[in-house]
Length: 140
Picture 1 (spheres, one colour):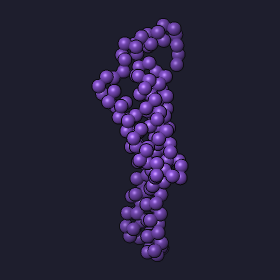
Picture 2 (picture 1 turned 180 degrees about the vertical axis):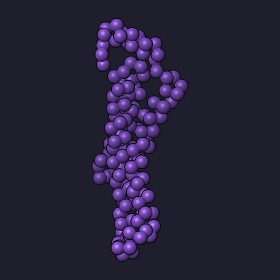
Picture 3 (picture 1 turned 90 degrees about the horizontal axis):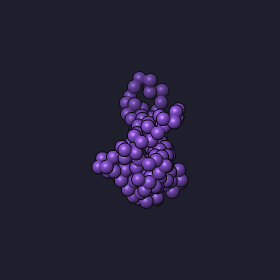
Picture 4 (picture 1 turned 180 degrees about the horizontal axis):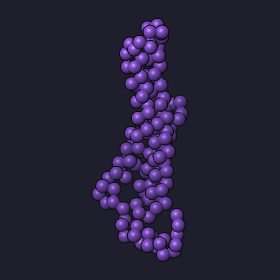
């Protein structure tokens, strides 16, 4: 997932903190261990924040698919449902809902991926709308 790249920084920080660099001699061993533990705890929160951004992305992609004529509207509905599922990671009970978030996400994202691999977009409709816009002088 794209948004988890930043969160991985928190997983790597304990290696730096506990690596024994000269500049770390100002801290006691317990302080360094506490800092490493804090970094690992922050990873989970940063990952959940990334999931919220991914949920917004899925929600917007679902809306765009629903509004377009190039893909079936039902794919947009499934993608929006996937986005709403990921947005539940804003709530304090996200861990207890995670089993219910994965199913709509797998369904929506999986169906969109499968549709694009097998069927693709409606190329004829794409070209018709592109030529209609160029004839009308549309400047989007």
